[in-house]
Length: 509
Image 1 (cartoon, one colour):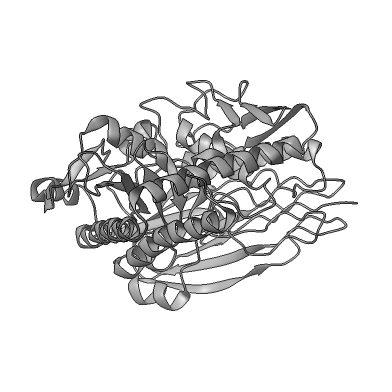
Image 2 (cartoon, one colour):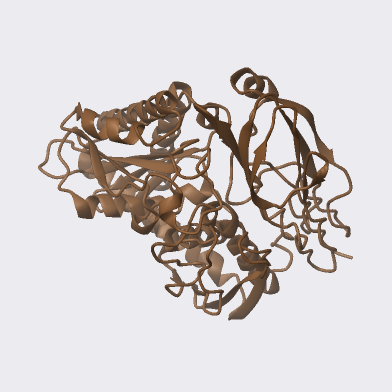
């Protein structure tokens, strides 16, 4: 059965709209500002094999990694109608422990699942040694509750014993229970909408449309690679350090392009580190998929077909494919950004007019809390300039697609006041087109708390391209004194914490 272009586009929008609606249900049902306001979540649909069918316009670092969590669930269970599994283990497809993924099968009359639906949400606390569960850990056991694939719901019935176990290990159990319930609601909405599609179009026609979408994505990715000159393109950049040792952490890549295919080889990158800057293979894969998807000029479905012409080599035991029991909290948020930077730097040699200079290169992770409360947010910086124009200022870039928490919502919910929130002028790199500026965000604490900052690009600015200069590094202060960008700090009522984020690189002389 052939699928004509009109039908192909119809199925694309129908399936993506389901993932988007799942996200809307999750956002509107959630308890935490992290999901309601920052929108730190992702939803997606998978076929009966666990291959990606459609994704919402959510978080790139979630979406590219989530298929490995779905695969871990499929391998762990023979799922039945009404089952829902949870997983956050970075060594089984997760990214870091705060990102909890819910996965459910969708049956449409046969004995086996016809689809799988999944939602991943960043929970503002999952236990561990610091409020917000983004600690300066040395092993994953310090980072919080680690969940292998487990069934939170069996044939429609919630496992109350498992839920009590999870809630007993977090600082904010009411908020966590509400956010988990919101994830289950989003899962149910996705399953309902998929069954509606099958009723309307029939399973054979829908299956053919899905296969056509996956094949079309593969063809478009191949065509984009064929536009790039054949060759080997190398680049390296560094993370400032792991917060334990002052030594920089190099990440190296060689991208080999030939005949519409790419081999992405991270051999030569640093060994996994003691601190929490380690990324797993799922995060490295997510960053790679994101960068190569950006090479496709057209708006095509983000399906499993995107990855068919691409092979990713990430040596086990390296900082881009760390092994247990490595600390992993910041690999998802910081190392993913540097992986993106080195991939773009390599591809800029092949397609200089299409690749932007480096963006701020960090999510500027700030987490804090006290007795019975916890908060986490990422803070924007400057985007890199390109041949087409200046970079955006105060913008979340690349592997994050989150929003800021509005000051009004933030101050209503937490014992903190935002005293300053502005663009950090003239921090973007100079060039024919300037890099975007970072920003300044100052927090006045109204009660004692513990604060953890994990940020990068404090030693070296984001690189420029085509003669553009680097962006300015970031800078952070506590009580008016310099604050270590990877540190755990006790603050007292009245203390001021200020995060000044890095600018993007400039483009052109």
